Length: 361
Ligand code: APR
Ligand code: ZN
Ligand code: ZN
Image (cartoon, rainbow, N blue to C red; front, side):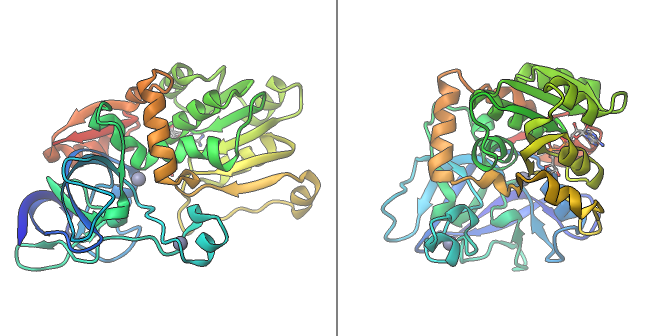
């Protein structure tokens, strides 16, 4: 059996996305069919449609989602129809060399559904990040479903599935920020603001937000930045040093993914401080710096993939904090939109008008 649903696909490089019928197989063993309730629009979806991630068109876009399990494959014991879940793209295998060494957030063999979703003519679709959730229903591996409290609105819960988790996790898991740290966050979109929030949750003594857009700096303040720096007007390295007794910040989180802002992060940290790169660079980007500065400064230079999250550990924890009023995740939802408006949402994202547009189904 299959279901036929509406979904947003990218048919070819640079072509506007379109809504079309998607054929979704019933779940086999180890799989789950999920009715999507909300899915955020992320940069990665745009990168797919621009051909920046691969050439496996057509793509079924969307990957930052929450919904309700509709059916599971034979033998499923952990999930049941009716469960409210956040979809994740890190269903860890438990057996690869990273998992065996006790670092499953680096898992090299994460699970996705085995069966393929297709167009009506049978053309196989490549689901974005193994999810494909700009669709009424999607098929994923059961491990890609993390159960959370259904009291969380789906448009809020879904955000933890990608960008907001990346930013929170950059601060909480990768750095990790600890009580009393000074923290600077360079780039205050959805990911950077989530890093600001993570730093606040961890008890940072100061949180310095850096951006070139005054509106973004205002929002960063609402998320808990104690100081803001417009780096179009003020040298961010000098200002961060000034705000930290001339030393630089203990943790600097780069949430853009550009060489010039990475360089700012590198020099804005204290000696033996930590830089976390959570923004995603493009393949042609290069960085040239004196090697002696790497040696002479010590500390740690880290990257953060998906906030080094473990969905089963982090999603229930963070939704729990949201429900207690300690993590204002709803502030990330700039607007809710229909499936038809994904292309418009890409344009708003490119113009920097939103933290997150979220498709509600
Ligand atoms: N200096 C300072 N801030 C900058 C600069 C710069 N040179 N260039 C851009 N910015 C700011 C923008 O004004 C914006 O507020 O960086 C922010 C980037 O935010 P978004 O475009 O909303 O992106 P976001 O969703 O937060 O993702 C950030 O993480 O997951 C990755 O692919 C994603 O690389 C992207 C990054
Ligand atoms: Zn693994
Ligand atoms: Zn994403």
